[in-house]
Length: 500
Image (cartoon, rainbow, N blue to C red; front, top):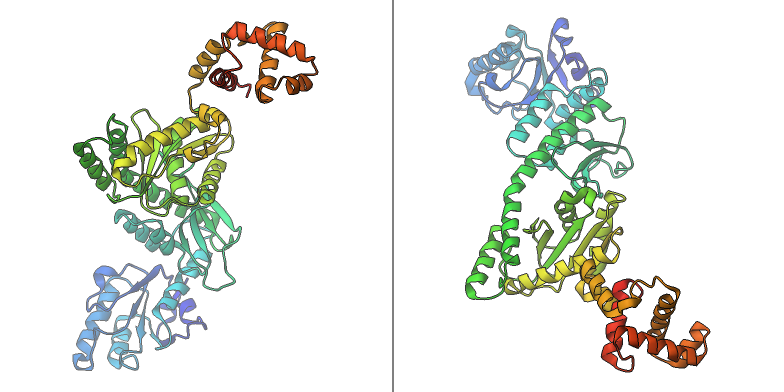
């Protein structure tokens, strides 16, 4: 953008006061707003300088005006845009100084906001960047300063796209909005637009960001990727800062996993200190969640759980790893509705198709003393979730374990197999036709509430045949099917075998 383009912009209505033709053809590199008496240190070559002239009074005469313009000339500014609101007009002393030092000058009417001038320059630059595919130098420096200051994605997004008037956002792979810049007009809402991946290092697929812009023509693709690279550095910095939080959560998890963690007052004091270190209140209630991903992404469970908690939690949370590698979270506040938690879990699971994401929750803990028990429940529910259907993502609550089969899903598979083989004896493998027939009869007999007639009808057998087979089952298993405890043992053995 050249000086003549800016001064001739009818939308701004600037009042050119002095310039030579050669100076009008100079390219503008950026905009600086200042009211310092000596602005030289803060002005870069080629910049348009906006000043409200607060630094000058009529008593100052031409001396201060001359020093101000001479400083701009020394810094190689492209044009001075002087606000008329402070003094009602641009002082003659300033006009004369600009003529002496060869500094193009225009007045900014009181109704024209400085922001409008700045936006006009940068919007024009964005359009011209389709040839260069690079951020403006001033914007690149500003984004670099924001990164150095530890700014978050909201500040990065506002600096990069706030002047465009088009909606922009940073979202996770699950669709959760991390930061957003709204459109200037109600009709400029964010649609499909264009999406660019934010390629930050060291993060799981569940934590990765995406940069979205509602208007795909607002910026050239190369520039959009450059902003995405800045956001990647921002996310990496945030991840490094979260390392301390994760360590505090790991320490809390180790404490809660210790035998007797809910015991004496010393243990309780340790738990309270652990909660404070995680930024959690020492008053309940709390919800504890345990989680695991499949073998392909075994180390990604913490990131997946953190994303699920961010969707569903209505209070502060700490996410970490237990000593055995299981991811866990302690969430302060009343538990979210089951529908909300389930929806959040489904969103996160869908982020990586084909990779199961299992979770378990227990009874909410009323206070720090109940946290260890809540964690034990959550871990059992997690085992139920992964044992019941290993390849299917699921979130199981111990409150939902309403059947013996669901309860047994939390028992390790090798233990279930040993129990079933011990109780069923020769019937366990059912390798012969006679053993298979007896196993089928046992299932039907228990399912029919040990009714001889209904069992015979279900199996299309004579009642005497059912009596004979039941006696053989009792012989091989050493159980008496007229006794309820023995019936329960055999039914449990069938469930552990997978026949329930």
